[in-house]
Image (tube, rainbow, N blue to C red):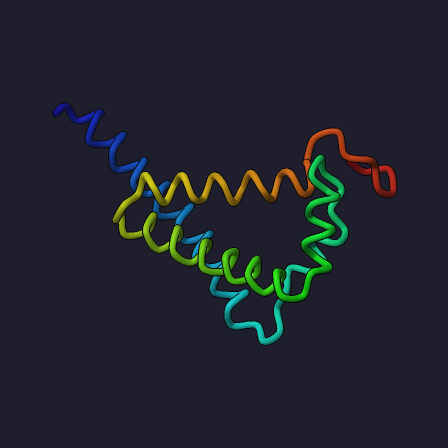
Length: 117
């Protein structure tokens, strides 16, 4: 291996760990906050799947399952990315979570709020 490939591999490992930390931290905060729920986030969804997300936000029993999947998905994918264990499946799971967040609130073509996009 050349020096440049070692540098690239090291940089990618650091990036993987940083992204993993972000996912893990977000899951940890949700786990530690008593009474945290995604209900408000889901009920105010504006994306293409808004109807589904708003319905999920109103279903008490199902909402608990959604909350647990969200928390543990963030924690486990973040931990796996940080330590490098099963990094590919963890990255796939993290991409699914991010895709769902983007479908709830698409960042592109959002209406302006107070003149700011």
